[in-house]
Image: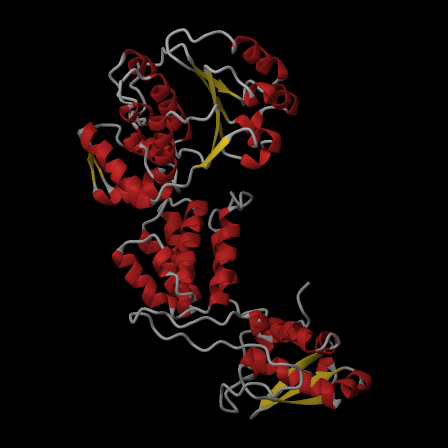
Length: 512
């Protein structure tokens, strides 16, 4: 006979063993002690957070024969032992996913009036109740509202929004939360000690994070790794089995982003793939780490669930990012985490996310002004550019002459995007020209016909173009509009296959 799975073996047998749901447990225990229990409960929350286990504890407590209600369940009386062994006839568990029809609920309704066989209450636990059909919900309503005195309903669901309001209004609701990492690690350590397993301490933290708040998932992963109780479960073996990377990998890739070092980032991603790391799982790790950087950058470091060493590194890195850059990176890696179409080239979603995170801010006017980081360990953040009102001179963040033609060309799409906020007609004008050169603080723009050139050279339009350039490039620039032939334009001395040359070939037009 196969051994019992750890998550079943170590299912909470008493309210004190329920992890991370003190707000629910305390309310229910007080109700049981005072004899003010409800006739119908709704337990909602993510999977693996203790909904069904708590429902069974309620069933045990209601039928426990211990003389002190505050000590129930005591796990020693006949009824408690029967529940623990799965042979208590008055505990009826129904899987709504496989009993969705009206007939199933009508059968329940017909039998509910029979008195309990062993205990004082008949307890009906309906798991995944949102899977019931609307007809089944309607058949349940009257019984749920006025059940016999000996009947108690406990409904459990991961998707409360799918439960009709008429059902919700008839239940006492309790919301289960995702379990914090620290509490999951403590529970895993207790199981490891009681099972006599040999596990490196760092493994438990990895399992807790991998489970994303689900205690059942974390225990199942531990069960998978601890095949032999005599062998040490190491961190390296755990990372290989789970297809994930250590926390240092996410920190290193974030460092490459901070340094704008494309080669380093690409090398790191491909090295992870060579080591067998799952690309989607690592993308989730990046989202989690970048979210932590964003919270630190915004002054909410207390919301980050990380160890002391990791937090120190995040404090140092966060000040080197603008919030807008972190937002773009989080969105890009989140898309990679949900991309299931690139199986033929596993690293591609990660590479695309990394490259997309390197590019300049496409919408300078939307940059978020952020407070300085409160911790002294963080480096001071660079000032962020904000959009100026129409007609205002561009910001002079750099001395004239530091902007090169290649910079103007490679950021031309961003200039076009910024011009839309200055005046709705400017993007069309800028799409019809291309930068030809930069002398000092004067950018020369070439137009293919005189009508467009003269229109752009008007005082209002010229000032709007200068403002857009200033917003993107951070320099006070002036514009000179000239007529030119597209064939006469020569590319600057740049790599013919590089992004600057490509921008010139596209004539500065926005990508479609």
